[in-house]
Length: 426
Image (tube, rainbow, N blue to C red):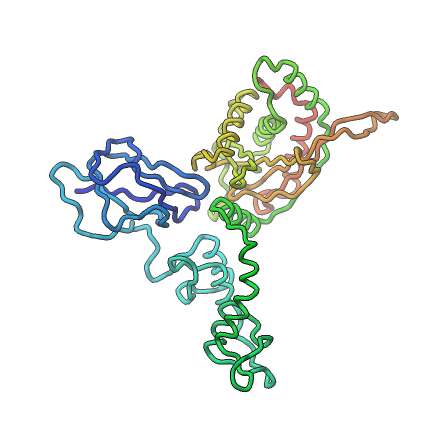
């Protein structure tokens, strides 16, 4: 029986991807471990490996470069000696595909439909390939239009439908029909004029930007976020990094973010609730302390993950983070580099930012925002002395953690930063 090659899931909430190209041609011999095609997921392009061997058969209806393909879609087959291709001319959908009676929609749109009490099957989809968009849900959730005022201008049914579809306040449109009646072309003219001027100024949204936007909205919508800030004495941390800089011949100098990744892992071991995840069945503890580091790249925001931080020395953390950051900025991250993670650190200190409100990276519980390290006056008894200080901003999901435990975590982290040396094996 031919072996089906189905589209895999490259991200934890991926429903579909973009087919990039075939790496093997129809009729080529494929061995286990060979890469067969390339697929673009949420924020990365992956070479998809075959787990089986055989002769590749690509149906005529297989996807072409740029086509969107749902997870689970069978796009090709591996044939064994003497086998014939399947009789079907179209790709087969895996049983996990959504029922045909319900239109396609992303996770965020489905959540919005549940919140608004909208039945997806009753929604008129306007998205690409019949997908339901958030705007479709909002339109379906709107109450019926109020009765038209007696002195409102007359409007044709087709013009009214076009205005409703695009949210045009048609009462303000000048009608060109008989007795001033608003016609369909009047609504079209009202749409075209301002949009034509604005279209030239639009910046196209990249796939990474769309994913980042969806994740940020999801983080704000599905959590109960609270942010705590604390000004922390970082004098010893600055001095310790200076010692690493003086011994630069021993290897690359760890960044302040590297120090904080290592110290945050120590604090998370002491306060494991900050690393847990909310699920409908209960809180899921972190199996391992994997920490994400937010990276600002030309293509957008990426959060690669440093794995098993407590098992690494500081220089190993620095090496792992440096490699991930370099790959993020080259656009070479794989989906597995960003999967998982029980906590995230985002550092805007290099831009002169003191404090900010980071957004939780779902399904994580907390994220730490780091501001600039600045020399500030401080009291030492009756004397005013100069100390290095940094502002930390901890955003956490109040469903998982109350204010007291979150404050204790931040207090522990502040103590570790004030006296970092005992916790940093190189």
